[in-house]
Length: 323
Image 1: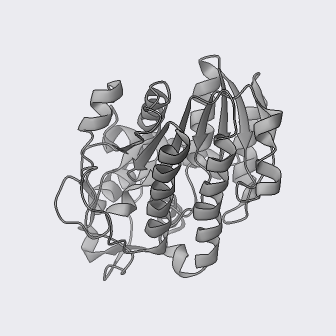
Image 2: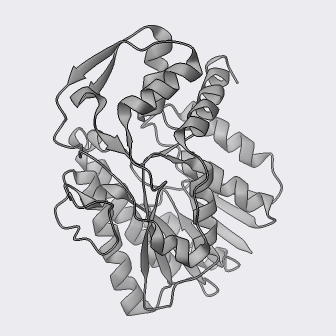
């Protein structure tokens, strides 16, 4: 099987690509290596992939339709797509909102237009986000919940992508599964995400800010569990005109201060903590109902934070020392 993976040099993209290659699939990886965070990290991830047989890299921006649409003709061997390329970061959407519309809305539309032109494509799996649930208070979040009150532009762009996928499934019979990721963490994570920022500050002796005393709760999901779910869904195509949207999380809602305590233990250092009010872009709690994805592919996350955080910390310390 030949799989096209967008955002292949990203955090989740690298792990998904490695898993596909490990099971014998061929992978065409796309990434534009944007400078949203240090491209050296993306290049290091890419170097891991390029050392593997069966991997081809194309430096392409998914929002560039002049570069993307011809891929449908050049790569007729593609039978699956995993679309992970996006502009991430909830709070950064207040700083550069246009980047989110370009990457997450236009980029998603271009991928859909490319996908519907691929003659052998059997399934498109794409990344959505738990952020679409906005300020919903009924827990756990279920795919049938209303998602029309986003609290960030990032969330709004992810919901827009879901709606575009719905229309393309209806109009063109494009089999699709959208996955609402819940707070993914692990080795090779992003510098703008809480685990990295917390670890960096703790080791440097700088204070870390915890909103509302760290009582906010998140469904922290280890990246290896995420990969298992992505591949499980990829191998089970949705009906052509009945696209799926599924939660993919750990089904455990943990206080952020508990996550920090486990990280402190893993690093052997105590954190200096500053309290602050919750920003308008942040929700109080996330918690995934994963019964639908479990029924589809047997998804069963295996990694509590007590196991996953030390694995992230071990990798981070190695990266900090130069790999």
